[in-house]
Length: 487
Image (cartoon, rainbow, N blue to C red):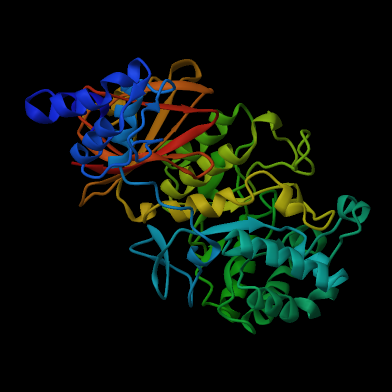
């Protein structure tokens, strides 16, 4: 019930006369105790802000009738739920796998919204300083992440300059590293990293089989595997043979990709040994371009695999320049809000969420993850969403989607976009809205009930309901998420 509906409710009979009589003097300054008692009785026990018992007059010059009515309206509405505490985050139980003909991820307990942190040189750090690596793992668990993605081979001048090279001679530490992750409640996205660059292709199958045997010692800790990082310059057949060797030794790992492929060439790296598509993630353009690309890959490119991973998307350090995440445009737009919107968009578009940051490339100091934009927001946003990957309908708010769209969006010249995911059987709908910073009045085409979730994953106000031809209003810097149902 909004303020105007409440006025209509007051519009007849004794109730309206009593309540208006009780608050009328608020406009001119005083309300006596008897009138306050009347107001409290009429409102069913509602305590007027600032009311005190007693026979003396009370000064209400700071209030007017509209404000008092609005306080009463607010008192009728349910308070927003509190933010989840770490214990409420969804942890992976048992073995993670792909369900329902490749449309979502599940574990032994059911549906999972996967949200991992990129920690590229965490294994390398563990080889050098196990205690420091454990501290960083603890911080990621505390934020709500289910696991980490890390590289098991790092070679070349870049890593030599950072003093973080790691190679197969260090693999004896893998079982202890995996045990540490298990102790800290994290799962592992394993990447062979620079293995294709550091070793000849005739060695790849043997080395991938060796890696599989080491990872299998802590089964089911490892949830995904790729043959190499940025290995799209190598032969697909050779990469595929290396994956086949891994599978012979450790077939239980269900989420498999050859490498993070270019967006325009995803299916070339799709083989009988892969189960998901994998890209780095679009880092160019404005923030709304980055978020739009998350939607565009499955919408326009239609990869063979339904499920995907953006294994190294954009991110930055606490510094304005962005730290170690390279070739990323408009670092200044990367903040908690943009990370939250991106997490929602990835999960709604059936993409495994990987939070990226400067320490996600290389950890340079203790506690750096905690200081990076998006650290707490990505897991919190994932916890706000329902089982959106399993929902069957996806469309946007543009003109071509008339008849399906619920929020109408003008996407011309970098304007508002509203990307929808809805239940095929049921009324659930989640809509990711984004665009240039501003306030948007969005036309609604069907009756809906739901709530807004801000980009930084906070519940915005109470649940609301709108009908066809009404406008819902939202203000954001990067975007916001509507979560609700068609009624």
